[in-house]
Length: 188
Image (cartoon, rainbow, N blue to C red; front, top):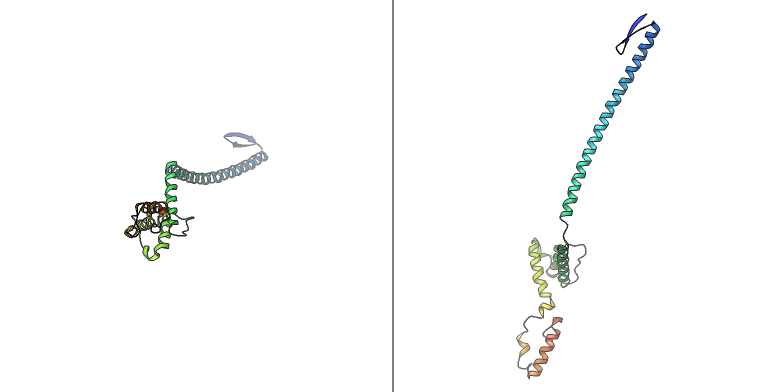
């Protein structure tokens, strides 16, 4: 009889029993090694996935911060109204210069296109947006028929030959005033 220790327990067995126990112990050791290797590979996969998750969490955190920033910077209704009114004013003024394309353009681009149409590229070449805006506003005021209707009439409209009596003078003044919106006050 042979004595074999299995898991700290001494067992008495025959030679064949001892061989069988040694074979089972070696198979058990192989299974333990395979489980250890599998556990190690699994731990590596989990670490890799944790790293990916941490990266995605950081990316989502960045996106959340961007969303919060954009939400906070969203213009109020009052600001939107002001922007719409400014846009309408720029487009209206630009149209007084002629056929100016406005779709898909910023206000600065619209002003630049109108000034270019009026004065040519050389007038605004290498000039700042502020310069272009000032030139645009100044030129637009000259194109404004309503503003032009308030211009003081020329002296030759009031010569003695044009004004023979007070009723004719009154009627001429009324006609000029009524037609001033058309922009041609000399022929009114």
